[in-house]
Length: 280
Image 1: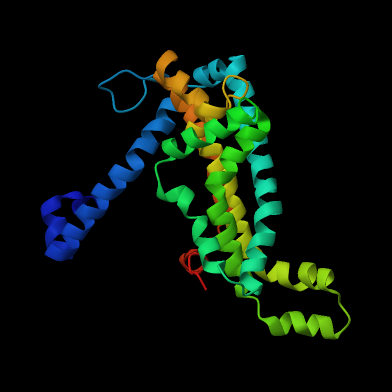
Image 2: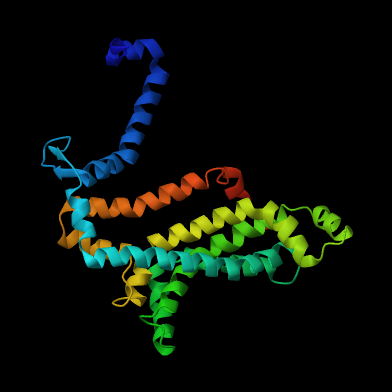
């Protein structure tokens, strides 16, 4: 086994093509996962001085430091609260819209779907500046409602396109069979349509939640100083706190996303995502 660590032996063992494929893969993994591995090491390092590859001392010193900062702890709570509200509000507004797009044919339907792409087709700063003018007019600056609206803008495309595709995948014959045995429209929707379409809806809600946790620019413009989420506090952590504390805070942001991805892993597939972006 250790003989294979010799580059020359490895080259002759696997051949020229496989050798260079391995080099490219190793470079990609190092580029992609290297910063994350370094972040994990930093987060659990009591002492980590360059040029050492590994920390000189391990521990939870900076975890205690981060959780002792009242503003950082409150930002964690606000982030999850706003993300949860954004996810629920997006479901209540966008799922009926997605169902109407999937089930009814009306003029301008594709243009309506395309309109949700516009918020992701232009620089966000310009959009937020325009929205800020309206928010000042309607006294939404520095309010929870204003922050939630900003977060919903980023999730509406996923929350309409993906569930719409999921509803289109439900055969009308299945709904008609439920109606034939006496189920009403509401019961048919919740007993037949929604369970079948749920994988696509689950992926969309995951995007809404993760997207809300990661939103920073809009929250900075609309929410400060009343609402300070983890992403807005991250700017201050990077500038005002030790680098190790920044790694801890970054890990607190990343871990919920990883847990959510693990929970939703059976629903996430290239096929589901591809179907969600078809304008049928």
